Length: 162
Ligand SMILES: [Zn+2]
Image (tube, rainbow, N blue to C red; front, side, top):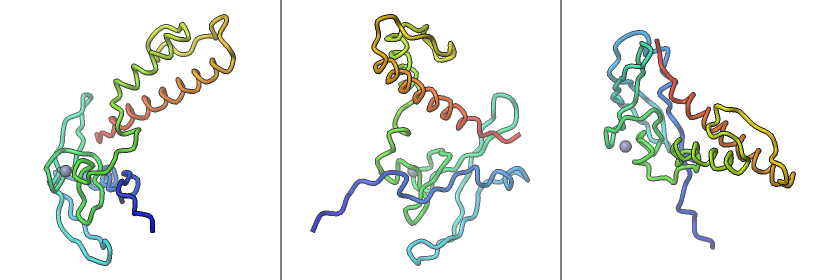
């Protein structure tokens, strides 16, 4: 009988994004959110502490404080109790593992090979003379993939209430 896989991706766990409570949090000065649910036929009911930070352009945003390690996080994962991704000990999806700086660096490395000006804000350039079409297509696809990840990460950081 094959051994059970011991590594899990974060996608295997139920998620609780703070954004789900955005409307409720707009009402007042909440310091915690009470959750109640059933996990593996066991009922859970408790409060999760919150913290908030100011946004650059006014307003503020709320974060969970992980009930286990009290780190600030925007998403908790269900392991019976809801905890942060560090506490759940899962392998992060490769997407979560990559800090945005690394995405920028990889995009720039591709831009360099293509002879494009560095920085994704400069948009896309043309195919360099002498480069094979398939190589060019592959690099452009990879560049597109990195660019959309970068935008996605940027948008994720804009979850402010006002
Ligand atoms: Zn934690």
